[in-house]
Every structure is written in structure tokens, then in C-alpha cells.
Length: 439
Image (cartoon, rainbow, N blue to C red; front, side):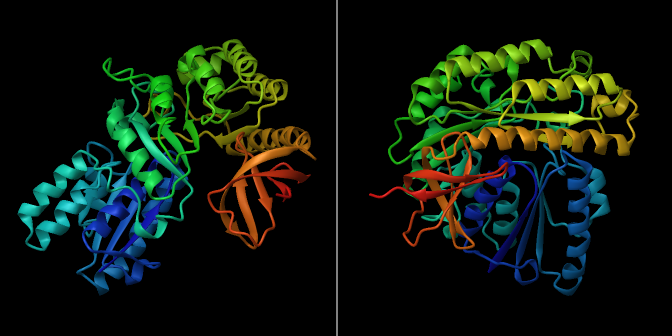
């Protein structure tokens, strides 16, 4: 029996798909490189942008042809297209889908397969294991011993509800995972060869806010730093309002926590930020960047920016441009605004910035950021940095620095999972090249 998983979207979906793959392997299934050859096809979907949702619809439509030819094929639709409350419209539109699973929950698929095979009693037991998110069900076989960096979700859902964001409606309210469960998963990943863990949450620095008996993110990082075998820890994505000095000091103090902070601004104009319901001003964000850099001098900072939000004027956009030019951040994930059905902005704010103008603003910021990052990376030239190598790509080993910079080296040695000092020999806006230092 074979399975095939198609994953679209964020790192949370990647982690969810790994858990589903492991679950299927515990039931006796093996990975297939092609959907046409699989007995179970899982589609793990994203709806943050319309393009991602359209891609999912296209994939679902193509699966109908396979289903007609092989009616025994089990199709499982999972993720944000389903949502925590289900999606009646999608179920009606695609009646040939056998199982609908909410985000981060493989239980419906596992129960369906076991009951179909007459294993109802086992289905109850296995469903309980997945409800507890058994730490043994972490990585699929092909990734054990090969995956160097892995994700651990620590906060599911979100209760902040920015006006443009669909996530709270599809992934539900904020829910922190028990720390013992997270630690057990980290130990299991370490036993399977993982060296670096990235903690995930829509607002990751709100970990524990919904559970006073849990540690906060700083406390969790301190516990995870004691896990043998894990050499690097990261976390994303943060919110400016919850990036505390305690958390920054924790990053600065713990050797295993990497000096890389992802904290989105989304816009550099106060009116736009208020319309987005972000809860801070551009000046407060500037001050936060200053505090981050003061406490963690070697830090790299990543941000997210949306251009063309409803009502955004040219002057307001210029404020965003100026902020990015002033702060000189290491990474800027850029997006053009697109309305998502059900969100506040889609219901109450006309999408009045022309698409052509959105593209112009996007490309202007992209050009600025490319220039800034090129200058930032140039400072690494001839410097010695430690790189954790992940895999070999087109004859070169790929790895990342503590500040999350992508580095390539040529070597015949097996560098997978090793932290090795290198000297940077060439830099560019997207990556750097290096030589291994002589032993």
C-alpha cells in the first residue's frame, strides 16, 4: 500500500504533513513519488492567498480523473481549505473526496482507513494516540537520519485576528501545546537525527498565554536547550506586541538559540497598521528593532510586508518604503494584498488599489530589499562563520549560519548534520559561497 502527500503553504503545514506520513507508515503504507500510483492521496492545503486556494482546487479537479479510473483510491483533503469547522461548500463541490481533515489533525484519515479495513477497535486506540500527538509519530521513514532541521508546532490557531488574515477562521483559537509533549517530540526528533528545531506558531511568542500553568516561550526555550542532540533552536513567527525583553535576553543568553528574529511589520504607515488591526505604530516597531539589536548585537531580523492594502495611498506606501530603507532588515517577505472571504477587510474594505499598482509597489520594495541584503551580506566576505549543513544540492553542500544566511560549499566529505566553520569567499543577495577551513 502506498501514499502520496501534496503540501502547500507554511511551515506548519510541512510539520503536519510529516506527522500524517508517519501515521500512514505506522498503518503499513509506504511513500509513493506519484499520486497516480498511490492508494491514499493527502492534499494538505493553504488558503492564505487566493493563488494557493486556486492551486488546491486545480489539484482536486485533476484527482477526479484518477478516482474515476480507480474508485478504491482514498482522497483526503486536509488543512486550511477544510478548516476547524469543516467546509460544506468544498464538500459539495468535490463529492469524490473521501475524508476531510482539519489542520494539524491526522485522526480522521487514520480512523477512516482502519474502519474501512474492519479494524474499528484499533481505530479508537490509534485515534487516542493521535489526539495526544504521540511523540513516536513524528517523521516518515525516508526522513529519519536524513532530516537535519525540523519544525515543531507549539501554538495552534490564533486569537489576534488581523483584519486581512483568514488563519483564525480556519485554524481556530489560540491553543498552546503541553510543554511535556513538545519536549518529548524534540527528544524523538533528536533520536531520529535532527540537529535543529524551529518552534512554530502564528504568534509564537504568545506561547503559554492561554495556559497559566505552562511556561512562556522563554521558559520553553530554556527547557529545550537541555535536550541532548539538538544543537540549534529557532522560533517563528513573532508579533511586535509580544516580543518581550525577557525573550530577547533568552536569545542572547542561550548558546543553542540562534540570533535570528522573525517579527513582521506588515506596513510602515500608522493608519494602514490601524486598519490592519496590528496593535502598534511604526515608531514602536522601530524602537523594537533597536531593542533587538541592542540586546543581540549579531542578530539578523526578518519581516513581512503587505503592499496595496485597502485604502493605502502612495504617501502611505512611501512610509513603508522609508521604514525598510532606514531599518535595513535582513529579510523582507513581500506580498500583494488579496482579499480573503470571511475576513474583516474583505467584508468592510474595498480592494481599491489597482493590481498594476500593487505590482509596482511590490517590485520597488523588492529592488530595495535586494540592494540592502547585498550590502548586508558583503560584510560577511572573508569572515569565518559556523554553518550547519543540511543536504547536498547540485554537487554543493547547503547550510545556514546562526543568522539564517544560506551558504554553499564544495566538498567531497559528508557534511550532513555537522556544524562546521567556513570562510565566506563570495556573497550575493540570496546566498553566499564559502570554503571549509582546514582541520
